[in-house]
Length: 355
Image (cartoon, rainbow, N blue to C red; front, side):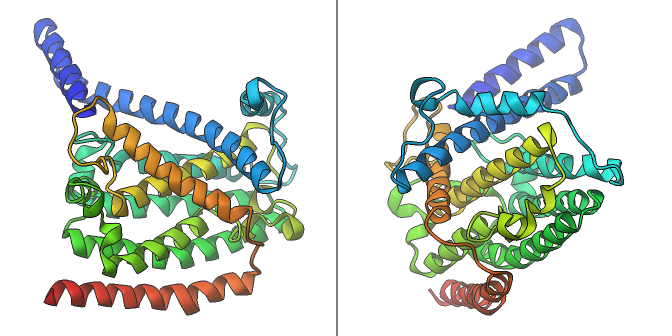
């Protein structure tokens, strides 16, 4: 398992430090560095895979083939597009605030990367294990809010009316849909009696029927988290911050080259993180649906499979439903999802109190 390999590497590193008189603090620093490298490699692969998959899924839904020419069944199309973005000129509008214009995509990507710190990939396999043990879910929700600042910086710093309007829409949407998402997650916290994502998974590792998804009082929170999670990553039908029919491209209208690519990277990585969160809260996380097993890297495989199920559902919704209007989107949140979230929280509390 991942935790066993991590412990072996750590023991080997500590042995080297003892032998050559290197401070033990260096082991922790190296562990964080290697963890960060793992996360950066992961989000790069995830973004490329998600973009390719979205093209294929949309093609299938619209009765076409999708990418087919660059590489076998179009596998090299997305890497070539990424290479093209790297080669494009970075154009900044003359009257834009250059600092905020750069800070926008950097903040958005940084917030997404920081969310990986508490994701449990296996038993005792977190990049920030001490964070997860104390405030895992709280940390995840708090860090996700930093992404709002990236959208505001990008929209305001561009000095463009369409960008600013898209940024204001985005912040209003993210703040609104954060409420049902957090309330739905709090229902799981009441059930598990912990904020630690690792401990939530450990309570579901007996098999598929131990998943929180099958508790009748947690089915409504699962549906609410699914809807709010899709809205949180600005996916259709909730993509009004970048509605091309109204705002050209919304908050990233004035971006080109790799800065534009960073917005894409953040969007697809954030979608995957929400899938990981849904898998941890309701689908048993890294635990096998077949019960206990000690196969190498099994937890990593199961967690990724469950997260990609969420991603595929989000893609299916995007290419099936039309975009909502601004008033419809906000009314859906404040008049339907938030009251339903409070009702779900009360139901879970009453059930757990008297069950």
